[in-house]
Each structure stands twice: as C-alpha cells, then as structure tokens.
Image (tube, rainbow, N blue to C red; front, side, top):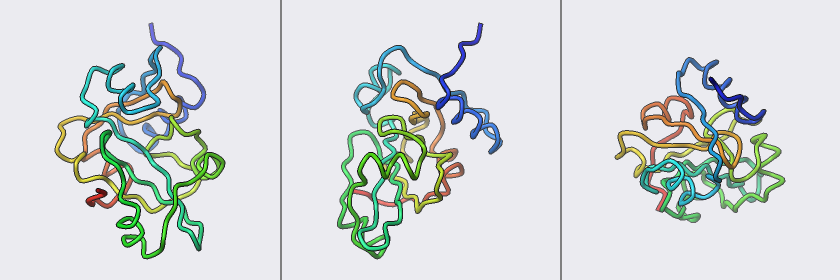
Length: 159
C-alpha cells in the first residue's frame, strides 16, 4: 500500500514526473533536516547527501542555489567570484519566497524563482545521492547525472 505524501513532498514528486524523471520521493518518520540526520535515516554516507543551500547576491538580490555535498562548507568568497557579485546567506523568509519551501526541506528543483545553480564537484564522485524533497522528512534518490540534468547547474569546486 502506497503512503500518501505530504503536500510539499507531493509537489516535488509532481515536479520530478513533469520533468520526465522516475525518481520516487519518500518520507521518513525521523527528520532528514541536517545532512547527518538524513544519512542516518537513509543509511548512506554524509557525502551522499545533497544540501540545497540558498544564497543571495548582496546588490541585485538574485537567488543562488548551491547543491553541496553533506560534509562540505561553501567558500562564500569563491561563490561571489563565480556570480561576479558579493553574496550572503539568505534568511528563511527569502528562502521560502524564492523556493516555495522552508529551510531543511528545500529540494534541488521545482522552485518558484529560477536561480543560478552550482553543483559541488564532490557530489559527482558518488554513484547515488539523496536530496531533500520539500519537507524536513522527505528525500529522493538520484544520480549525479540526474541532478545535473534536473537542476541545470554548473559543476564547480565550492570549497
């Protein structure tokens, strides 16, 4: 028997299907909000977790999405060089307004606002990875190639 997904997780599932992908969103009983929690719930390494991090350019206020490997931290100065403008971490209200999702459940696709997207090159070394799917308990499995196709992101060093 199939379990009904929450509204936000179903929105991610519908986005995946509309883009022609067969990936399945699953919701866990425990939280997958942090990379460590997600890895524990799924049974994979933290390096296989995709963190969807939203930044904002300081002057033009454009959203920037970084799809980072779980243990990695973003070098914000380097990211600013890539977008040719200083950047800052986005606050929760900005994240919600541009993605349609709250921090802890932001997926790599299906956002309200198109954004510049960068993919952490370290994610490309895994055969499978796991990304948030709309809630702090929902995830979906995909390959690095699928993530690049879904997000239209540029693979870069984020460290």
